[in-house]
Length: 126
Image (cartoon, rainbow, N blue to C red):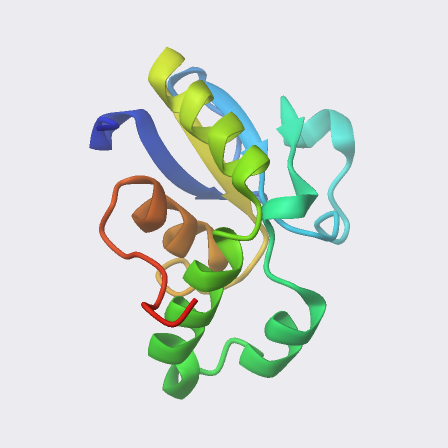
């Protein structure tokens, strides 16, 4: 089981901090207007990001949040290599899942953290 303290989430536009540990961008697209040198990203794991169709469907609509959580949790299970890589990083030390969305409580990094911590799982039909 992974330690909660080892997995943080943070907006890409917030300043990097030494407490972030390994900073992992978990979005499919690079954050707009952010220079790579300013982002201090250690790894970019595009494959674990929500599919383009799911991202567009969600559109950060709070009314779709619960369904997005489940659909994305299901998609994550389709990427076992990336999920294993994230688990290995979190076992080795603190990681910060970096995302670009404005909403800090309803975004893909929050769902990914919850999947890594075993708080949500894929649907039985998946």
